[in-house]
Every structure is written in C-alpha cells, then in structure tokens.
Length: 184
Length: 99
Image (cartoon, rainbow over all chains, first blue to last red; front, side, top):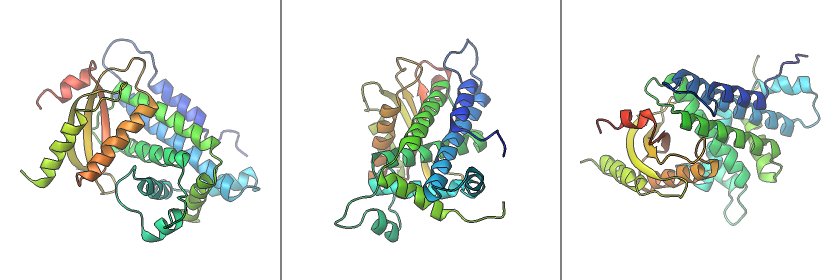
C-alpha cells in the first residue's frame, strides 16, 4: 500500500506555506492565496471523508477504507451539511420533509449538535470559497481573509477528528449513505 | 427601487452597524450572484477593523456569518458569502473606490 496518503494536517501545513503569517512588503501573492484556500478546503473534505469510512466501516482494513473513500463526493458532504445547517438555521431554506422528520422530529430531540454544526457550516463556507478560488476571476482573497479560512479549516479538521457524539456519527453515516458506489 | 434592492440596502446597513468587539464592520456592499452550482447567493464585501493579530478569530467570524446569514434570510434574500477586507489593506481602498 502507498505510504503517501492524503493527510488533512499536511494539507493545512501546505496552505500555511502558501499564505504564511509573516510576509514582507509588496503586493500580496493573490494566486497563492487562492491555492491556500482551496488546499484548506481539501483538508476539511478529506478529514470528513476519513470519518465517514471509519464510521460506516469501523472494522475494515485501511485498503478497503481507502477504496471506499474515493466514492465520497463533494456533493455528498455538501448535501448532508446543508441539511444540518438548515435545520439549526445557520443556512437559509428548509431541508426536505423526510430529512426534517429524521433529524428534527416533531416533539423529539434534534440530532444535530454543536460539533456537527461547526463541521457542516465550516464545510459549506470553505466549499463556497474553494469554488471562488478555483473559478471566479473577480473574487478577492486578501491575506487576512485567506489566513482566516486556513484557521477555520484547522478548527473544523480538529472538530471533525474529535467528534464522537451520536449526532456527529449520524452525520458521517448519512454522508456514507449519500455516496454512490463507483467504478473507480 | 425593487424589493430586492431595498432588502440588499437594508442588509448592507445592518452589516455596517455590527460591532462584535473583535469584529467591527466599517463598510459593506451586497450584490446578487450565482454560485457554481447555479444557486443564488448574496455576495457581501466587508471592510473590517484590522485584527489585533494575524487575522480575526474563528469564533467571532462564525458569529458574523451566522448573524448576517440569518438577517439575509429574514429580509428574503439568498444566503450570504462574505469577503473580508482589512481596513488598512490595499484591497479595501480599491474595492470601495467607486462605491
């Protein structure tokens, strides 16, 4: 097996190199800022996908988990994050009725906790910025905004790695259920 | 003036009153846009008081995003996406030069 896995912490370090805390004078390197934000997003995406396969296949070996992990798409995490954020009101709109019934049943407890919201909101924020970084020629990435997104990604990766609540495990499990088995 | 324009002006005005201690909004703009997936979004550009350190804190920024996101929904606008400009940076003067 490859000894070169994609590690969220290393992606965060790479983002730091692209947009370091201390800089000299002169025009900011905007292209580096774009790459830093995109890299920070991928740190979160891979942290989440790691927790998804760990949650769904707790006793599977690493080779199996790596194979399954490739099937998890950005849209899968985005969809479930959107449900969680909309249920607690940090994102606009209302999730589909069957999702509300599942995660926030009338008269029952809401299965979206503070850690899950941090992961969901952070993922959606970084996904939005990653798309702007990669495709929007008019987007502006100041040094401090870029540094703020790296800090957000570091925080979300830490929360993702540590989350053990029932709500968080349901969140990871639902992402696994959204993912489709693919030929790759 | 259309209802949406009135709502965007209200959101901009609301943003410019925000003072969360570490985060103080000096100027704001709000423009409609379309995300990569085709969904509508309100793109806000905010000039913030310079942070004391390297950048602004994660938690105050979470609060800022939540407060503005909820206000946008209350005003009938689509979700917000924030671009943060520090007041002493070159981009703040450039972006607001002709506004």
